Length: 208
Image (cartoon, rainbow, N blue to C red):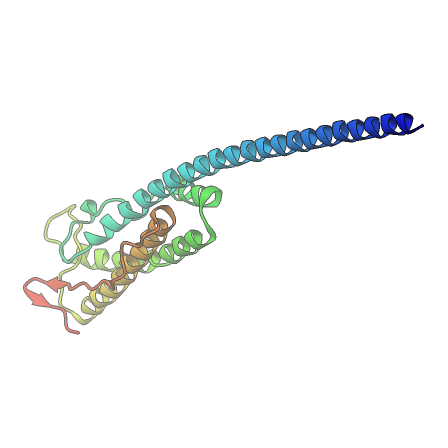
């Protein structure tokens, strides 16, 4: 009788050992498979993040190129400047649409907000430019040459003073936009200073 009980006990212990080994092995396999799935998902996410960052980087560079082209034209707005030399102050609708599409597809909410602020600074510049070019046309001694007015009458003086203010706002907004894009791409800000400009008509500084 005792031999039978001993045999049964031994069998039970053996089965229990086999079951424990199986369960441990199955648990190890499940854990290994879960880790493998997690690693695969992590690697996939890394690749996706890198791809999106690359797209955002390319979009931001193209956006800054567009903004700087406008900024370059604005910097050329000085008394006596030839209107034909100013450059692309009002880019084609396609360029504007592309810049907005790039931001919509890849830009952050903050970058979109900074871009919109910058966009709002350019219409006042165009408005003053139209007035100064019209005044310059009436003053020009050369037929067919259109230059920005250098007159010292009150209207022109006020227009150049206004131009100074709106150019400062545009450059500040442009730098803040560049700062935001730089912070997103590189983690650092490049500009943290106010922009100040001085305009002169001939050899005389504009009154404050």
